[in-house]
Amino acid sequence: MGAITYDMEITSSIPAGKLFKSFILDADNLIPKILPQAIKSVEILEGDGGVGTIKVITFGEGSQFKSVKHRVDNIDKENLTYSYSIIEGDALTDVLESITYHVKIVPTADGGSICKNRSIYNTKGDAEISKEKIKEGKEKAMGIFKAVEAYLQANPDAYN
Image (cartoon, rainbow, N blue to C red; front, top):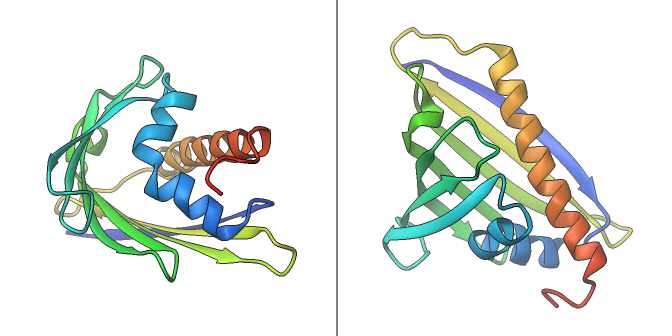
């Protein structure tokens, strides 16, 4: 199994704690509400939402994929970090064993934050994934992030 790692940083005017609460802790409720075309629903199959929890994410009509299984690997509310893995589903295609994401939200001096995201694509055998596919995934993640950010800007009292 090979691994391809990509890092991405997104700067936001939203304070780090508020962004972590909405984009990480309440994402299962918030994202289907504001972007139902991207994510239709999130259902917990096992666990209580903490480490080890297995969720099924069902994509919306706008997605080329149907669903994925998502495992929570780590949550650190004090340090605003979250790790999870996509362990099953059609989004992995024939090429990927899993995708692991490490997210850290860092406060900035101006009261905003930086969302740092490391994605690790674990390929099956010596399979390769195209840069275009990774770029597509990054663009979708950026779109979801920007939608959450816009929601928080339009609803300043949310997640206080």
